[in-house]
Length: 231
Image 1 (cartoon, rainbow, N blue to C red):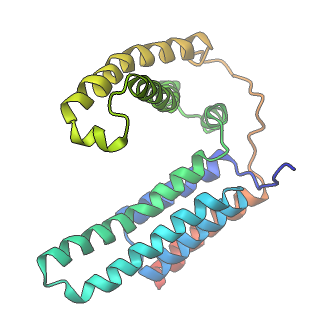
Image 2 (cartoon, rainbow, N blue to C red):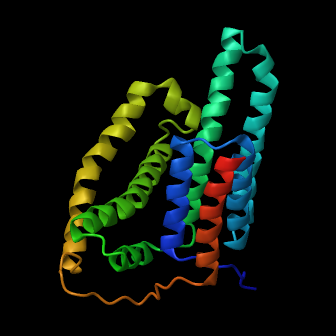
Image 3 (cartoon, rainbow, N blue to C red):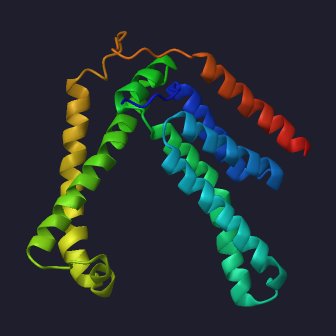
C-alpha cells in the first residue's frame, strides 16, 4: 500500500531553512526553540518520514537533558567542555533538521524549477545544480571504493579506517579527490548541454505552485519569529 504524505513546495521548504539559519545566528528563548523543533518534527511526520523525524527529535531532547545535567557543574572544566558540546549541537540541530526536511521527497529538478520561478540568476542556478548532484555522486564513489577495499581485505571494518589513517588517505581520500574533479566537469557539461544556461523561458514537467499547506507553513514561521521574540 502506497503511503500518503503531504507535499510541500520547495520555496516553503527554503523559507524553513532560512528561518532555522536565523535561529542559529539570533537564538530565540528555549521555549520558542523547542516549539520550532516540534514544528519540524510535525513536518517530518506530514512528509511521510516519521522514523527520521523521531530520531532528530529524540537527539534534541537528549542534548537538552545533557545540558540540564551538566550545567550545575559548569565550574568544572571537563563538564563545561561537554556542556558546550551539548548546547552547540542543540543550536545547530534545527538547521540540520530543516535542511533534511527540505531535501526529503524533493527532486533536484523540482529545486531547479523553483529557483527559476524565483527568478534566481542562471549564474547561480548552474553551480547549485552541480552542487546538488555532486554529493550523491561522491557518496556513490565512496561506496564503490569501500566495496572494492573490502573485497581485497583492506580496512574491512570502519574502525580500521581510523586505526590506519595513512592507509585510509591512500585508498579512499586520494581516489575521491581524483574522481571529484572529473565528476564536477561532467556535471557542469551535462547542465550546459541540457540548456540550463539558455536565458529564454524554460518549461518544467513539475507543477511548482504554492498550496494551502505552503502558505500555512510560511505563516507559522513568521508568527513563530514574532511570538518567539516576545517570550
